[in-house]
Amino acid sequence: MPDPTPDTTLGSFAAVLAGELPGAWTSTYHPDRSGTNDHDALTDHVWDMNDVADTLAKRTVDHCAVLTRDDSTRLFVADLLGAGEGYLIAAMAPTDAPAEAFRGVREPDGIAVAADPFSAAEDVHYDLLPRYDKALAQVRTNAARLTAPLAGEPEPLVMTWSGDAIVVDKPDHDDIAQILTGAGFALDADRKVFVLSDGDSFRVAASVRAAGDRLSELGVGVLLSHSPGRAAPNTTLAHLPAAPAPAAYRTR
Figure (tube, rainbow, N blue to C red):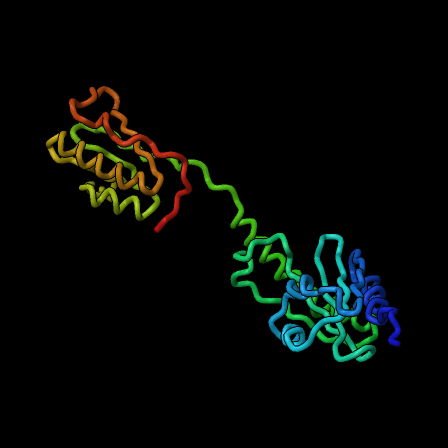
């Protein structure tokens, strides 16, 4: 009758290794309970596309250990070939980051170490952990960028009556400038403004409305102002589209 006592060789190695690594680490041993203990939930998070991933794809993990640092960084430990012959140690991907945050991040591939936890700690410290910490930092940065709150409503574009013309300060974004040009505005490079002057206030108003419709698609509102001392023209400019609901500005 087989001995039901789990093999603790790997567990003992992982416990000593945790005490030798820099920082505060704890070790959790996951034994084999006659095939009833499912370790897929752990192996699925092994962050490797090299030797460790290849090994895990070829055989079932019947027991393993997970080392956890006080900042939730985790290391996966499994047998290399057999008890006492060495171990595989691999990074584990964070579970709180969206999948998109891993795009473009190089996997911190794991390493094979001897059964000596003291030499293994040096290998982990100087080989695996630097790559692991770098990859984690990249994922955290990506995740923060992905989950950052949307920017508030962008500044509206101010169109000012100046004499018989409409004047707009040159915008910083090329797509806004293209919309103004398409609506009939001409760039005055010396003054760094776009000018719309047609001589017919009704056609000017129509051009402004057309520009406002296109700008609203980008989430950019339009405000019409009047230069000091100039009365509001008798046109339909009062019917310009209202500023849109807040939206994040995106260039095209």
